[in-house]
Image (tube, helix red, strand yellow):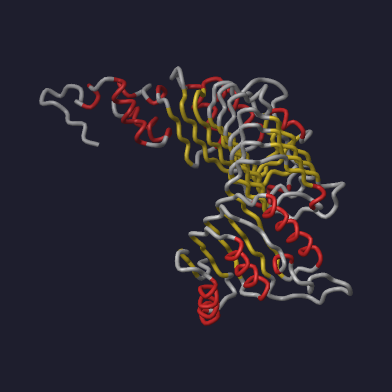
Length: 414
């Protein structure tokens, strides 16, 4: 940095700039600790870092974050980013309330922990009420998190909870995200959260929701009249027992549904979704009776939502098929061989993980028959497919297509 001292030895020209401009320069430093070190340049700089509207702590010792927040003097904090290692619940619980009082924008907190530490019995991080925050992203390395029993997150529009162990009753998450306590919530991501066996959310404002890897979830209730986009992937404990896995979704404005779970059809209640345009499902190949029932349910979804415009199909293919028990139904002809669907609005199909089995080829052939106005089809082969096999499959699949359909067929890319 060129300080450009004058001939008379007076103060450098950079320090002569207005405070607002100097603060903007320090924001561009992109690290709160580095910004604080500019205090050595001149007396004029000593307290400027404390006026920054954004604080970014990259790989900082966790005990230093609280001291920095306590010294912060800006009336509003629009961004707080903290990436820290091996942070204890006690230290987080100490400085998060300080951040909550001043934050009027977004907080991104990521805690990196050693894998061995994730199994330790430790206390919980107490999440305070962020009354003015607009975005909260917490990735805690499976530290226990205690949700606030009261308080309104009045401006919160985007919430992301990743790699967290919920502390206390799992019903607390649904209570927290209700319209009464999060009246402005628009986007929600809950991924790899442990201790969540029941999730009931009633939100009038929610537009987009993603649930990933909630493997111990056994009850899901979504009442969201404005919801437009829903993705639920790899969730639920015992999908073959309807007494343990129950889903009830009411989202009349839903336009995109990506449902990639193994569920007993009798355990799932999807209310009217007249505006649905995109459907994402998964099929299992050579998996026995359980896959037979699951694939039947997928065909049921296709039949119900015949007016979709886009189909996203994920295929799970087992290369090594173990001997089936007596009476197994996996050898039965799949439903799609005889199913007659009228997907008269379907324009785009994306298939991921195609292994080239007879059943899969038959399904693709039927899709061409069902989708009379199809414009685009994208197929990615399973990683087990060799180059020669891919060439053979490509020619076969193209023979099913029509001249007005854009075909994109590719090999698996790791």
